[in-house]
Length: 241
Image 1 (tube, one colour):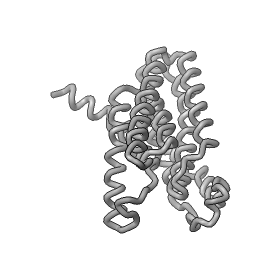
Image 2 (cartoon, one colour):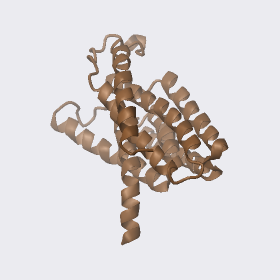
Image 3 (tube, rainbow, N blue to C red):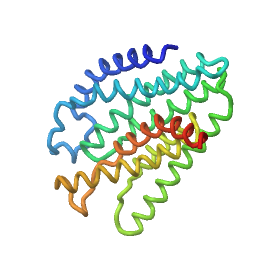
């Protein structure tokens, strides 16, 4: 499939779809009773372009991988539908986390289920067992790492990483695992890098204090997307050395 047509179509559809999504998020119906008095998050103008760009990049990567497989298009079609739902869910989760520092289960669990079922169907229609096993291991590895961090921070008297972040690591690790181990490693590591930069920026702007907390989920998502896109180039560079 044309490398330019698909991203443009996916980006356009994602951007248009993001408009009603942003309006829904502005209603803050996801807030708990004790969160209703929090300041309004605003119009969420960034949601449509974020959804459009993310969908374009992810679908481009899916078809780029499956163009080399035989048969490629049935697997790519299933994965495209699956990851569009996941990208949409992650965009909503990012907005919610930025607002109330929480990743609601009513979005998280259906997203994890959609990803699992979608990859299982992709395996059946020709994707092979290896990507599915790798995705499962990536989910376990990502979730296990963040669970360890959460337990260590809890032992020190804080909860710098919450259980929502642990579940998000399962979702991101599983999605990246379908593509390859470099994607998993770079995507998970990228979350720490982006999170660190984001924390330093918030401190410099005095938006948080040294003892304060901030939304870490969006940093994990940006890191995962960067890892997904950078892994092929980095792998090629390393093999050429």
